[in-house]
Image 1 (cartoon, rainbow, N blue to C red):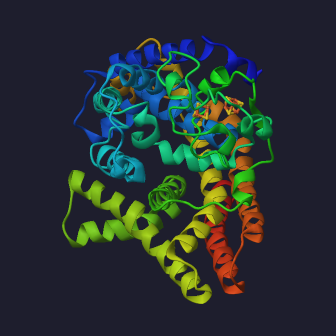
Image 2 (tube, rainbow, N blue to C red):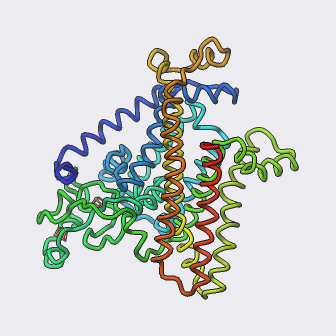
Length: 454
Ligand code: SF4
Ligand code: SF4
């Protein structure tokens, strides 16, 4: 069925157009909804319909689809439609070295995480969220007008590396059906320049040659090559879970840097669900903020920098240094092996966070249709003239607890299997990867069992 959908000329543009309309409506629903009060913002983020959909459903769904199915989110993302349209009428400049390095994606994500979320609370203040979405839209338009093809999707989109790395876990892959057919193919319609700017049936504007795709990171599953290939030689196939991680993969430095940040983010997001582990996780940034007398928005910036940049950098650099010294590996090989070793644990914990977030917001759905703006409901909840009905959460609690144990355990087992398969130069190098996975995975497992079971 997936292959049929990809081959249909109008199906994917129609879905993208639909998601574009939804995108605009979400902005409309959040514009003008603002508060300066952090306590009120904590409630308002769930009572404003747009904010609730974007951060508690849209965003978690992106993570879930990437881990389970690959970059299917990119298939329906309205930004692809927008940037491809402006790419057609724009200046078509080739992206420079900096864009091609992947660091723009990493930096863009870091700015959103540290400045956007943890300094200005774009995830809690609907108007800021709307401005963030408008900014994304503007970047997609401007980059489309300047650069060729869909440079935004390939070299700028702030979640590009996240989706690429998590799609390594997926049980689906897009590949050519018969590589020999490609070898003998004279027309090569899938990469032909003449097809770059067609509305549908474009050749690959992510710069890929389908016959050479070796892992899931870069193909955004736009489905265009399905329609451009005149030999009908492309398909989405099933494969074993995380098949890419059992092969040799080289991460770029930009991807490694991105992964370290996500790894710190996931530790904070999952462990801060339980007040005991939260206290431990935020101890260092809180101590720094108190010692330097930093308060307000800047305290959030410091906290994010410490948790998502400094601590992960120290953790991975120390372990990579041991691997490099003991096994005479390159820095890049050491970091790559460590990142890929703990990727399944990180992805499984991100899935858990998505589950916790989407389920915990269920009680708010009772209010959002009668008051989509959310200010009235948030005021009532704040002064206790309305209360949340948490019976659904109590009902779901045992299921969530089960996932809270199974997901880290599953991630840890997968990590062990990947480390066993990785080509290590010697036993010490493998032992360090195992140690990293063990420390990292057991930290989640212990905290989640203690929180949910005892
Ligand atoms: S994917 Fe299709 S168009 Fe591209 S080289 Fe192979 S057979 Fe030819
Ligand atoms: S290979 Fe290129 S054109 Fe084909 S689905 Fe992937 S990104 Fe799209």
